[in-house]
Amino acid sequence: MTGGAAVEAFLEMVSAERGASKNTLDAYGRDLKDFTAFLKTKRRAADRASADDVRGYLAGLEGEGLSQATRARRLSALKQFHKFLYTDGWREDDPCLGLKGPGARRHLPKAISEGDVDALFAALNTNLTPEGLRLSCVVHLLYASGLRISELVSLPLNAVTGDQRLILIKGKGGRERLVPVSQDAQWATEAYLAKRDKFVPNPQDGSSFLFPSRGKDGHLSRRRVGQLLNELALQAGLDPKALSPHVLRHAFATHLLAHGADLRSVQQMLGHADISTTQIYTHILEERLKQVVGEHHPLAKARR
Image (cartoon, rainbow, N blue to C red; front, side):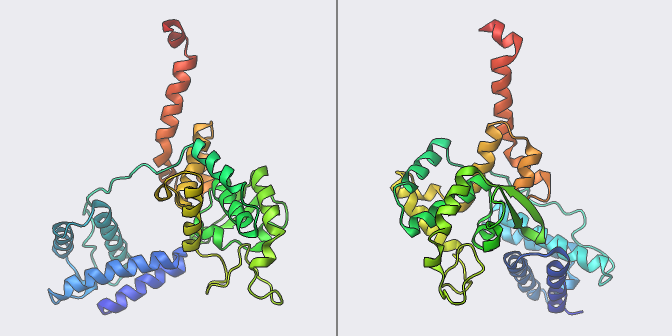
């Protein structure tokens, strides 16, 4: 197997067996292409790399000033690639075995305050045009259900035409989950559905998407949602740089935990495959526990 064929075989496996998204496949492809280019200077194929080759590549990335997170991601791609070659019998060793990465820092998610959310909804309530009702539905679903932006824009119409208290979401890797929808979000969805036909490109053919559009994908794009949120932030008196679909998803999780939700329930609603991904929010739980102890523990009361 040549180096290029090895990379293609790996990407096919990730797509077929793990159900990886196009964005994930593109990221793996870019990282392995960069590694392959590095090996060409050593006249070595990607599937013949040694542990010293991998170390030299990572050292070069650090010398270029790439961030800790980027270097950790590149090493992760190389580890998965070489593990695939080893387990499938394409080579007899794994050059990445035992290699430790730079330990990418896990930054706390950005989130807006509950007061900021109130300001957003107050601004939404002043715009009852079809465009305003659509944006209201988008914001309610992002904040009330914690959807990823890719999940939201590709929602089928039939996801909200039955029992609107729950939405069936098909997330990363084809995994399905049921997400609860608040009463306010249900009302916002109903108000938007009454005007949805305005956004259907061809009324004769209809559209299967909840948020149809004339764009190439047939539905509202992630980029357009980001633009609309920036405009909304300005109307609400907030910094547009501080608002994005991802920030609303983080706010969903952060505010739930702050009001007593448990980590496992938030994991399920966010669609995280592993609880360790959700544990980035544990700082919220820690602060809440400190507050509970400070307010209700007998010794704390005695000191007061």
